[in-house]
Image 1 (cartoon, rainbow, N blue to C red):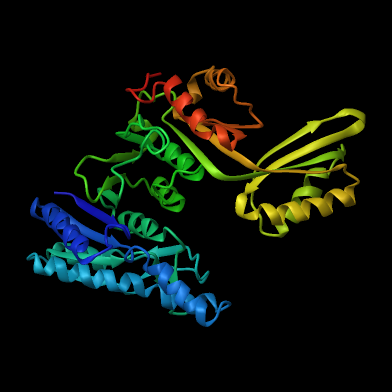
Image 2 (cartoon, rainbow, N blue to C red):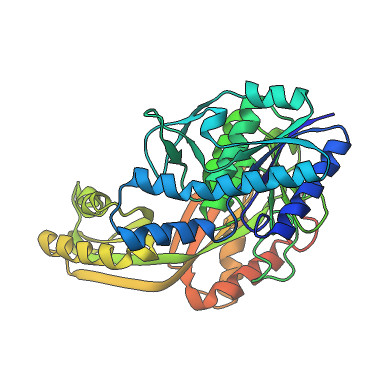
Length: 409
């Protein structure tokens, strides 16, 4: 018998029929003798509907009031699932985040979990009750409901699993696991049986949408075994676990990519101390996050300074950069919004040389020019023109043998 926390997303809870299907899956685990705690999201699209409704009344409404509104989506689904479980013959109780004492800070709309008292849920499990908990929400210091930000239900599930010392946290979604890359780009993409927390964190931060970054961070910090599985297709899914569980790691576990990149180059900047801070300081002050940075030493004591930002922030960052360039006496700013970032990820890179050179040769053989390069212990990222995205992903996927069982270190 195991203690399992199962989290079901909005697609899984999208209709009465799907909620009853979720109830049947929960019942099958319960009937096997497992203790099950369920965390659910609102019905697919419901949070957006509620947010749009609120914005139609007051586009600049307070974050606290918005949280009171959008948190109701999960309150509907916890009640519906509890009713479905009762109909299936199980004892079940529904709880909002505040009712199980998921305590957060007061950063409404993006609150962070401070503590969880798992005793109430454990008591239910001992009595044979299946608790159904609202994801995405908790109790702020002033007694109000605070939401955790988009994807926060994943974090709720992992946090509850950590608080209860669960054997596993299962994230049910509309995909059957984590793949070597997006199957919509590379049909030969293969589902991974296992991936490390580090690799999953890199994949999530680099564009993979399977799991929310905060949930992976939380799982890694508290060593909660995490499994991504499909609500609609039976299968083992992908287990996300500690690196030491994989004695022999593949050289490359997956290829992530991000279409939402834009690049700015400040040309002819004086090459002197403080230039990076002078350029990026105003960008940061405008709440624009910078991703990759490259600084080149040019002729006559001048340098070119290149960085990337999210495409949504491109116009803002461009305007700021032009003002900064003028104040520094730079030659100008060269913008580019037709770029993407493609990344290789794998813990095997730590102990194996030559992966970067192989990656660069594969791209060169395809006539793909690399604009920027960034590396870490387990990641190599390149920026290329967006029209080459699919060609780059497919050629790298084939070159590193990711459609088959990957080579071992």
